Length: 316
Image 1 (tube, rainbow, N blue to C red):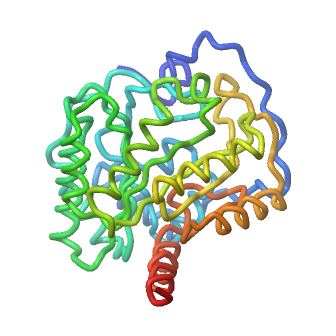
Image 2: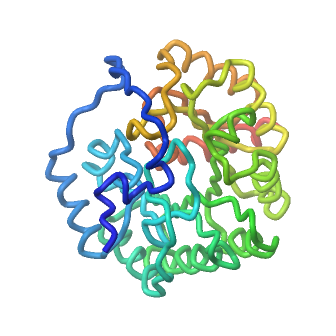
């Protein structure tokens, strides 16, 4: 059996990479170890329902804070990804077959957690003809049946190797927010996100808006990978040209020495500058802090996103 706790078995594609030093984190990055009653209750519900979370698999620094409030981001379609992005801590390899009962278990967990807003993400599944689009739609519909008052945010793969109908079916399931992360600037894709294509991901977000102009779209990126400020501003312009509503920007943190190196720690003042620039370019909602992640404070941010759109529409 493959032991995903072993870095060499978890990331066989990185086993022969040279090690990159892991610099000491600055004070603004450090977080407390999770140990609250709410954290342990959320963990129990995840285990009881045999669910995988990106919070654990990706080593999110905010897991203690989010889980203490019952906010876990569920990762469907297994825990093994077909991609080998150099920044990511999710295991790489040949995934298992899809679990047809997983959508129901996700819906039951959402109900037991009493979530007003839930984020559902997944591994990449290039082994499937539709990259898992149908599994996303089944999960969305299962949550709608079980918890009709819960708003749903999805963070999807790029559907790079499947027919356009795959994306169309997910949009037809009517999630409240469609998120797909660009992750980094286009010049770093060959080394950071080698299995993906920047302009394909950008076009995917644009296509969502063409299919459903009322659907909120969202994307995120990391900084500290070696990009410069001008390239980040260009990504903002590209996303606004695709009519994306919500942008998240956070600090890249290196999961292991075999992962992509940290170029530098971006200061809180620089993040504030990115936030101001993004709002100036027309985003309805921006979250740009060192600890920002795609699903961090997602429920509160969704409420602010809806209010921002209402304000804009009221001014027209």
